[in-house]
Image (cartoon, rainbow, N blue to C red; front, side, top):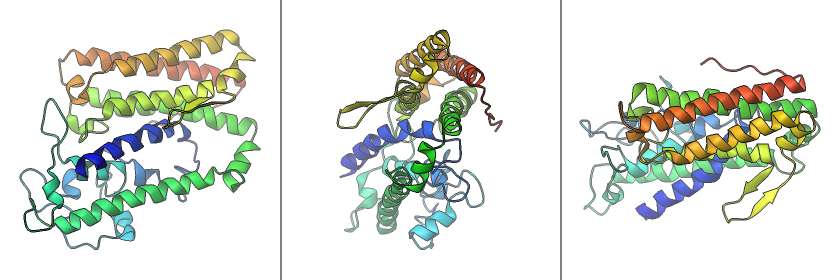
Amino acid sequence: NMTASRDAWKASREPYLQTEVYRFYDGPIDNEEDGPEGLLNAWPLDENYIDYVEGDENAGIVNGTETIDAETLEGLNEAGGEKNIATGYHAVEFLLWGQDRSDTGAGERPYTDYVTDGTGTASNQDRRGAYLTLAGQMIVTHLTQVHDAWKPGAEYRTAFEAGGEGSFEKILTGMIILSGFETGGERLQAALDSGDQEDEHSCFSDNTKRDMVQDVQGVANVWNGTYTRPDGTAVSGTGVKDVVMGVDADLASRVDSRINESLSLANALQDPFDQEIKPGSPGNERVMALVISLKEQETVLLDVFDAMGLSVEIPTE
């Protein structure tokens, strides 16, 4: 069951990461009123906020006295510090893999951390199991909230489809900020600069390469108007590329080439990612090449904004 849970976590990341391109314009995922993004994918995460760590077997909520329910965990998320993550994908990731102390693989939390028949390892196995189960359920709840806002006939989707140029501006904003600021900067450049495993996006499971690939794939999906579902079914419609082609075919070609290059460079990263960012390693060049390509991708997409007479505000932190 531990292996099956880890596999399910990885499988669930594939489509989720491709939707991160729909962030950064106060949509259903990250609007200030009730957007659940901070409860879904916040990172980096201080492990000892949740559970035991090397050198402190009594650390974290699991080994504390807090009630383990959805309201409590939501209230504890980022309470007292932005690294105090209590919910979402990375909380579940840590509960499944534990700390990663290996240069060649992921964390190796034993399944016996959850065994309650008296033969289990660590302590508070029942609380750990309750936490893991609830955190997984909360991911589904929060994703469903976002999904429902995009259902045919839903208020947000209806307004978005009628939004004309304003909605097109939002689509491009998500592509631009995810490309340069978020993936190229926050997730890649910061990790490369520090060389610290703690700064990689999925540091417990060593899934970071897939994170990077699927973020870039999400941008490619919107550009091309295509998507491949988890079951392998390919669907297509009008992409941003089609719109830009009607305005400036040369610009469309430049964007197309850059996105394809970024996707190729993301796939060229090697596992585990923590060895790619290790100071002086050969992987540094691969990571830096992707950072440069994503920054150039941001620039050429900004050219699309200019060509369309639009404007975008790039975050500074």
